[in-house]
Image (cartoon, rainbow, N blue to C red; front, side, top):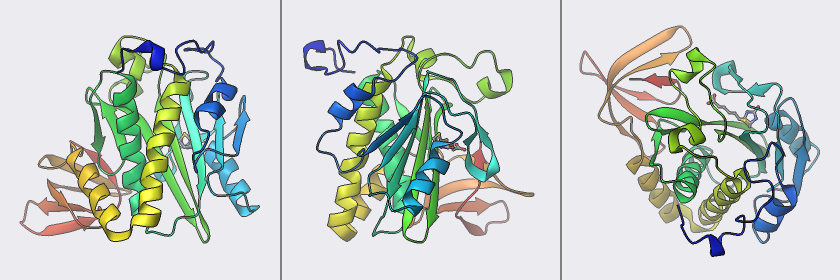
Length: 272
Ligand code: BTN
């Protein structure tokens, strides 16, 4: 975290840890980026991903950002719900039209979130394969990437302020940045850092081809806490167990089963 508050564009932001996002401050911070404009804000919306997909189908430009203070029917991976903490989370969805394979979106979004967290707190952020971001061993961010012919939507949910202590089931494996860091965090500054990081990675992937992809994979792999651990992978009715040995060039997890065979895992929920 920077301790030079004079260089922080959000230092005097009236909405610091406020229940309402300061959209004008966020828009100003995103000036010049490819990702983040136009910015579509709702005080409340069922799901920013669903809304962004609708906009994409209607021809919204690449970079369109949908955000809200209260996502009333947020969607998670594998059909799960994403819990809302009104006024305390980030819920962001971006309309993209990538010219590279979607698994690089998985890597880029998780890496951008991890770096933005480290830029705005003193926490170390790690990635649980494929793209959950954790601090102090607990999930603070979930990412839902939905692809359709002609577009993709990246949905990012970050538990920023408030606490999950009132939800014992969730608190067993998830937390908020504020609980982990011990202080509230300006959501606008975190969102701006995240979008700046993602914008840079997205541009590199769009223009940089193979070397940008290799660099991204290496940076993402270096933050994976999953590697080298014994894990269980739930895939609907099936659960696989083994050692998470590595990831392949496409980001799939290479799981060494107890019978010695190596399985390539492209999706699933990992637990240790
Ligand atoms: C997961 O870990 O299961 C993914 C959670 C993704 C939640 C975000 S919040 C913004 C966007 N809108 C949604 O409905 N879901 C994603």
